[in-house]
Image (cartoon, rainbow, N blue to C red; front, side):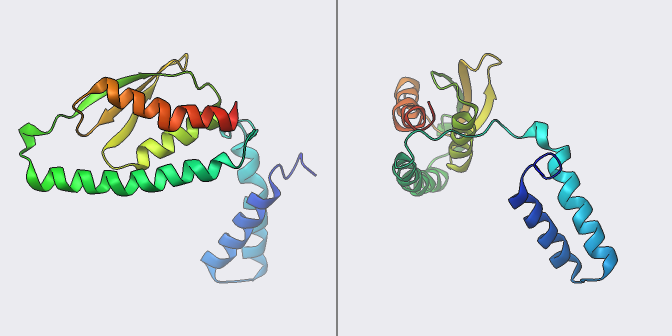
Amino acid sequence: MNRWIPLPPLSVVLFVVWVLLNQSVDAGTLLLAAVLAIAVPLITRSLRPAGAHVRRPALLFKLAGHVAVDLVVSALDVARLLLTRRTRAIRSRFVRVPLDLRDPNGLAMLAMVLCLTPGTAWAELALDRSTLLIHVFDVDDEEAFIALVKQRYERLLMEIFE
């Protein structure tokens, strides 16, 4: 069964979404939904990272709390900067952050957090996963920003995944 349907929940969701999008339960729609529900997970198998091994799931709540607070604070900071500073006074730059985190799932979560947070964007991960390039909308002290990323997110993600 796992050979033909590697991710049953994904297949079910694909099947249901296809039927809902077509607003029909005729034989053709159901057949195409079944084909998509089987084919898409098989075709995209190589794109999915290895299964996540969460070592300390309770820390996910702590991470979610950090992210929620940082999203609000960062959005307010970016809005304040846009409304009160001239473009030349905003110190946008790329910052290289050395990484100790190697787990692909942890790196994926770090990417999501940094891309969701207003004022930061994930730009590049070194091929050896040793350095992360982040574009920061406004940064005074690069070292303080690096310390923030490493302490607030990377250390926590390492505890969760490694």
